[in-house]
Amino acid sequence: MAEGRIDPVTVATPAPIASRIASGLRRADRVVLATVAILLLLLPMSLAQFSESLYFTLESLLLISPFLAASVVIGAGAKATGADLQVAVMLQGRQVTAITLAAVFGAISPFCSCGVVPIVAALLAAGVPLAPVMAFWIASPIMDPEMFILTAAVLGLPFAIAKALAAIGMGLLAGFATWALARRGAFASPLLAGAGGCGSCCGTNSASTLPDPIVWTFWRQPERRAQFGDEARSVGFFLGKWLTLAFLIESLMIAWIPGETVATWLGGDAWWAIPAAVLVGVPAYLNGFAAIPTVAALIDMGMAQGAAMAFMVAGAVTSLPASMAVFAIARKPVFAWYLLMGLGGSLAAGVAWQLAN
Image 1 (cartoon, rainbow, N blue to C red):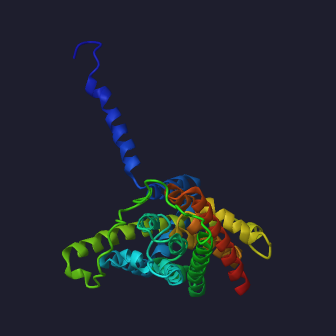
Image 2 (cartoon, one colour; image 1 turned 135 degrees about the vertical axis):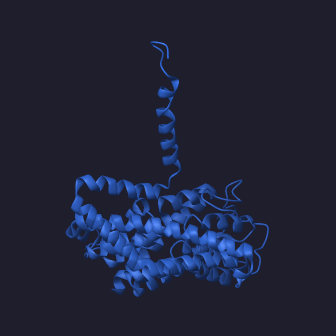
């Protein structure tokens, strides 16, 4: 090589490596990255806390693994059989019957706050009245079979049943209140222009075609078996990553957040504990599954039962991701009404559960 000449290979090598690392980080799952980042930051800060948090997280995952497995099977089975696409049929018919069915089905359907948005958009685009759709819309993200199982395992069966009843009650309240306003001319055109298909966070659902009949023996069809496998992997990874992060955060909360502080903020007999929990649930709610162990830790630290219920219900319906998804497809009056129904119903659910305890 001539004197003074720089080998281009030597100079160019670091740039592609850095680029590949940056590209890999962009493609990596943010929840997994957050979990790894917390552990890496914790390691030099306190080896003892690192070991304690890691042990706590692994032990918690082991204890909840049977319920997690049941959740994955239920979620994947609903997708493979086609049971998750039967919503439109159930929401047609007389308003009282449709609203009641929508609230009940919403509480047991396997849809999260974002996953329900494309279904809602498809139903409204197909001409289903807003009242039963709103009942389903409010009830669906609060509870589903997987969440019921995990909630019962971590927070107890009474709490899980109360949360399911809160989902149905809020759905009924939202549905009949919407119906009363709609009969007076409100919400004539609920969807934004061009929002008849998918929202910002979702899959694909056709509004113009009814779903195929449910196939309970899905394992006899290769494409449904493949769908079950794909969904099981997807649901398993989704639940696993969120629960891992949640248990890790729970371990740090137990170690670093004084119980008396939580009791002061959201516990005891303070009249503002439940309203505060409703408002805190909007920005602080991570995910329905991640919230379960987090709320369990807060209850152990002194969080009031009513505040815990209000936080979980309000977060499911009006968290920032859910609100953004609704805002993307609905006109402003419908969006505002959705928030009002979610926050008001959450406050009522929290007060009712507090009185029951």
